[in-house]
Image (cartoon, rainbow, N blue to C red):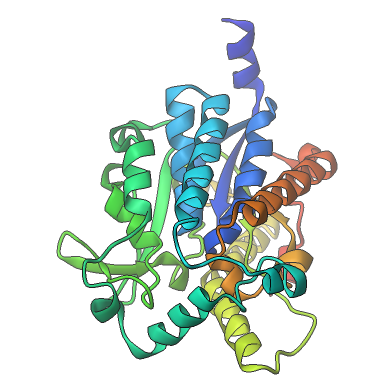
Length: 346
């Protein structure tokens, strides 16, 4: 066995749960870039929603085709292409945005127009051709045959079934460009994505991200959640825009809160001896990499801001937080959770 193979075998296996949040997914890009750099870690599964699903697809495709460095390169290429496309759209931050609310688009005429029109007309009227800017980029960068063949690093993608209201997990053999677009389908902007006769919206409504596939189908007891939607806020919102932003944060965290409460309950039963681990239930160690104090200051409009300066700053923030997390918590992998689930989610 080569030295490199021995290192990979000795690395700690981890799974990653990647939240969605539009341009804020660039924070996750930074986190992934730092984790992929660390030879002490081995990613054995990812679950993602919306931008988290896009990031996850780049990681799995890169790992399958060339290893961690290839995954890092593919992530970089994806976000650069997304930003390059954004330069052609009217969704540009103005000098006033940069000065008053860095990252936001609240003073952008293009954003104001889109925000107003999306409240009056549906995407079936505004987006008649059902154009999605990410389709061409995904088809260019992602080998879906590769994703479907990746047994060692499965990717689970969450979407919301429009008619049933249930979560849909696209598993390995179901992954396609439509599955990724379904996971990122904001109903105010895009027509529901049809797959096999069913229609889907953004997975954030029912699973942001779904954690249970990682617990069932991956060979690791450690789940690292990359959190980009703030759970708590220090102030009660009072403006109409701030109220809508907070509603968005709460609704896109609700499914995750429920799953974490279930994990905490099962873990407590195992610790108390009420459940025998031989019954098939395992105790999982939960970890989180986040920047809540920064993300809570960013309004909803910033999720549509793909300006390179902004998303690169989020990438750097993600790298810094992942590096700090590794310094403080690496030794806990395989041993214990690095967050207090009860305090954070109950």
